[in-house]
Length: 541
Ligand SMILES: Cc1cc2nc3c(=O)[nH]c(=O)nc-3n(C[C@H](O)[C@H](O)[C@H](O)COP(=O)(O)OP(=O)(O)OC[C@H]3O[C@@H](n4cnc5c(N)ncnc54)[C@H](O)[C@@H]3O)c2cc1C
Image 1 (cartoon, protein in one colour):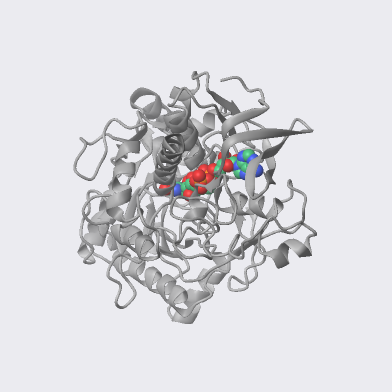
Image 2 (tube, rainbow, N blue to C red):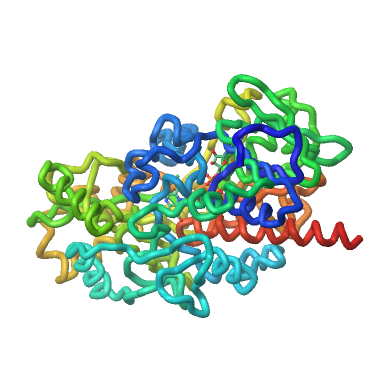
């Protein structure tokens, strides 16, 4: 509905990302409530958003991405890492790598053990299924008929098949469905696509809801603060086209700004550690020590291999003929490399002693480059990265300034513990083991990154410190929990203020063991149900 800012709404949803689009679409199913969805970024009209591999063009785009920079990371040679996040309808689901992975059953069991009643695997599974329209027929574990298209990768790449074969030779079981009975193994992931098009939450949830008269979606609307009175959130302030507006929330404000922006907005609004707020002269609305704490992310370290045959994508990407072939294949069959996700094969494996479930994930790509992005090497090459799935290190989001347009300060604090360093080193060693197997070794002329000379733990760690990057899963900064210190309770209500919920990656008590988009969509689905249940209770009271 119209892109005009109203004076009030029953529910104000801040942030049209993976979770926010779901919350707004689901709440507006009830025609008796007015829902306002505010998005800082633009509409999703850029065509690169919709082409699956378009992420290579959009992730560092000057307006479609927030392009955060971490503070110098002490354990990564003081490098500052770039953190792209979507700033457009669909949020990060509009420019992510498309991989659909829910995480492990054990992740949600652990959430439950941390006091998050209602978030055990059996509790969240119905929401995963509700969201999903899986190309494979619906099963006990997979959904059919939901808004989110989930499809098999459309590839027939011999190098990917060879890599999978080599992993099996290395003792890793084949796995046809990482979201099935077990996550462990090697295979190709499913993706959030249909017929070779990206299925962001804007496409899946918002588009079908846009014509509802009770849903207003306003883009280019930066929420700059949450207004409060007498211990209750009463609305938001919004900056749009240079002017500042106030919008009243009759029932609730639901914050879906993502793991960096949600805590940032809380801090700007006086909700956070009192001492930190005082440093910036912000009056304290609620002294919540944990806002912006508990930041977790998956760090990836890459290995690049040179090949002795023109396999993979490098050659095709670097020749006009190859590009034309890929373009034609896409146009005629909606398949081929232009539909690939940011990992055409994955491995979930255990490298740490005593791990009961996979603790590392590999992303295999049949191409190579010096850094993630579209500039591929001139030689034939392939990449395998490893990331530790359950990092122990914790970072922070804090204020650098009270200007709502200035970015928050990100201290990711990667590799702060010995376990985290061990998991990364041993992940690299397992990649080497796979690449030494008879199925693939004859194709490899050498290890380009880090190079065979990097043999010792010290040398591998030096490679990780010098080259690793985010795999884009920041989470945990408005931690949900059953304890009084947690930022939100298991119904996602902010502790210490009425009328305010948070629903996005920030509420994860611990980051899920895998890519995070599916979990954020599930969080959006569950949040909408919780809000609807509260409304019913209010009516009944
Ligand atoms: C480059 C990249 C690749 C990734 N690849 C994958 C992958 O392959 N598979 C996977 O599962 N996950 C992947 N992820 C991670 C996944 O997409 C995110 O974890 C998930 O989308 C986060 O959802 P969210 O709802 O927490 O936040 P987001 O989807 O980031 O949404 C937050 C929204 O809020 C808006 N917003 C923020 N602040 C304000 C404000 N003050 N006012 C108004 N609007 C605001 C933002 O612009 C944004 O649209 C990737 C992420 C990135 C960035």
